[in-house]
Image (cartoon, rainbow, N blue to C red; front, side, top):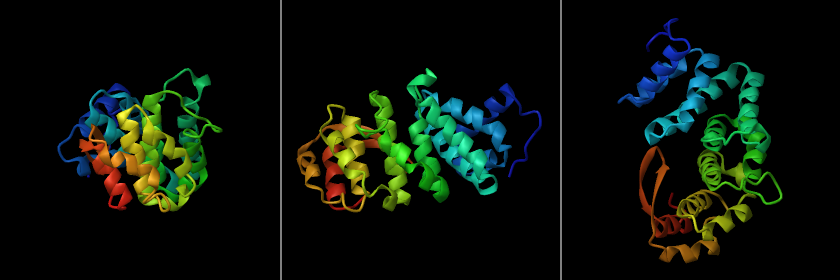
Amino acid sequence: MEKYNRKWRGRNLKRKVLDLLRAEDISQALETIGSLPPRQVINPLFSFLCSTEPQVKWRAVKAIGEVVKNIAEKDMESARVIMRRMIWNLNDESGGIGWGLPEAMGEVMAQHHGLANEYVMILKSYIQEDGNFLEYQPLQRGVLWGLGRLAQERPELLKNATPHLRPFLSSADVVLRGLAAWTMGLLVGSQGDPALAPLESDETEVVLYLNGTERSYRISELARKALAADV
């Protein structure tokens, strides 16, 4: 494991983190990021959620999950501060857009059970009409991905999410349709949901980052897998 160099501060640290996120051996890179002082590395990682390079963005999501999990294991309140920071930046009053934050929240909760229990209702509320519904479609995509990531590890926490996912199955946005189908297939009670059936004939293609890989899917493929609970 590469040891922390005290010269990695400010811009130097940010450049170092970017180099690691672009590294060929991502497992080793994530291990090195995990060895850096968590309270110093979290800000650079947040900045890369806005990256126009998909690989950098998604690796930053993964790294944030691991860093916040490590913080929570030693100091739960400090981890809560980071979660509240993400929530604030998704609030209209923050004046920001919140790029990548729903995905990061989902990744954190997938990796840490305690934080998942505390914040699942907030993540879910972002797709609830009677909750903190996010109107902006790119953020809706992030919420659906975050819910799907959480569902991969802790589906029992989302057992009542299905009614709020169904409207996205008929969205004009192909990414939302695809992510809704993927997420529903991961949830007990959603598998085999008849609302998925119309998508079996939807041959639209969409590029999604699922299970650590970005590739093209047909909506029909995602719907069939969801109906068969094969995700």
